[in-house]
Image (cartoon, rainbow, N blue to C red; front, side, top):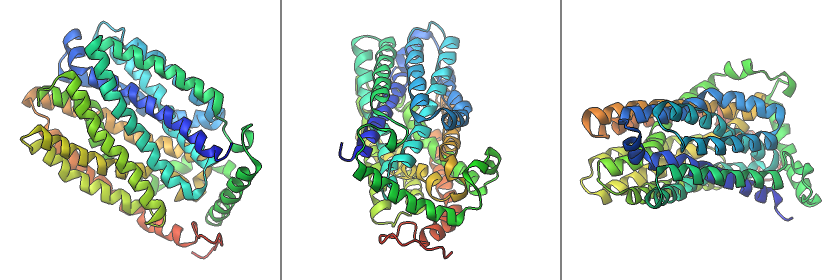
Length: 435
């Protein structure tokens, strides 16, 4: 098959889309779920945070497991797991079992980031990785765009439990796709042509030679301790943590915002929620194109610009008197936030040469930082809404955190600039060891 590497990544993008269709079931079902289980917004926040707590705790272990078991096996098992616990979440009768099942559901979905990082590293050309990172975030946003109205339609026609059942069953089909069409490495795939394999090996070898010029470590000598002693990993991880508050606020609470504050129906809230994530998908794609084609593979300036520009849009969304203005502001906020986040997961492959062979584990650390924001965001929003019947204070705080998080990435700018200046992406393919 011609361009098999892009087919493989397309299967992964389907996985990402389905993952986020699953995640939208609880957000879209929030109001009828709270009414049925007799819980308030603060208690609902506990259930939402349980998902991200499981995600937070298990993100790094998932990366380590994938390093040992391989990409395909780990992804299939975890995908089947999240399907099962999505269905069980729809069968609950009280808050406690919902919290338990959402926690395990979150543990299962930690496979997403490490699987992408591993496939991107093994299959794609270095010059294509920025686009893959952009398409990664775009696929998640597309999943939300599809998931919000799909779940809303199921809730409207059936009930909130049906949304969990339907999305859980869909997950089993994507696990089957992964089983049929994915291999960990290009040379293992029966459809791989010798021409494409030679191209992948040649371009990756150039990349590896440059990385070796920076690295004093053999891959086998890279330990977890080395990862956690790296100051740049910590600072960029904290930056990612801060810029994800707005993202998680949208993902977990936007349908509730439209229902409770703008007084829309469940179906209308699903449609209004889809629009900002459609904008985020576009922003993610645009940032990938900009970094690969215009910014000369420099990711950090793009991250900073997007993170800073998202903040005033969050303020506008809360202050707008009309729902049209609010939705427009949310779309711009999501566009810039998606633009920024899309490029963060390329960094493990490009600015940590000593640690490249542990890229899935570094990616898992970043996802841990991301999910920590997902734990805290609903715990902040729920009590604020119960006390004020407004989401404004939470979004103002999260907008400020977005700016701080974006600026933290500047601490890695000199490192990235120095690395790219060595010829990492020289078109003629001539590598230099001059630093």
